[in-house]
Image (cartoon, rainbow, N blue to C red; front, side, top):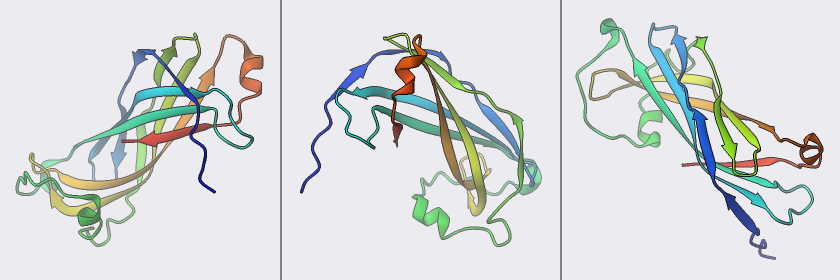
Amino acid sequence: MPEEKPDLTYLDFKILNENWNRYMLEDETILKARVLMVNYAKAENPKPNRPNLMVASHTVYGVESPAKIRGAPDATDYALAELINELEPGKEDLNFRALSEGWSEYVLEDSTRLSLKITPTRVMRTKKFDLAGNPQYVVQSVIVPKVVAKDPKKLAVMSSIAGTTT
C-alpha cells in the first residue's frame, strides 16, 4: 500500500545566526562546519509515530590545513563514492577535538525557536586535494535539533522531527 502524502504547511523563518563550529583534527587541520536550514514545515495531521515537523537543511564544511600536508591544487569536483575509494591509509578515523561549537538559531513565524547543531562523528582524510591544495575529507556527522515554543505544552505532544539534507 503506497504511503499517503503528508499534509504540510511551510512556515517562514528568520535567521538569528548560523555560526561556524570549529574542530582541530589530529593532523592539525581546522575543520569548520555549519548547518543551514533551507525550509521548515509542519504536518497538519501527523500519524502516530510519524514526524510532525520537517526540516530541510544543508551542511557546509571548510578546512584550513597546515602547509606540511597540502598537495597539488586540484579543481576536480569528486563524488562522495570517489572520495571514499581514495581514503588515505591510516587516516580513516582521525581524532579531533572541538575548538568552538554553537547552534544555528531560527525563529519561525509562529514564534517557535528552532536551533540546529552539527556535530561530526567521524572524519576521514583522502588522498585527494582541493583547489587550495588542502586534503579533502569525508565527514560523517549528526544534526541535533532543539525546539522551544512559547507554550511548552505545545511541544509536549510532538512526536519527532524529520530532517532532510541537500
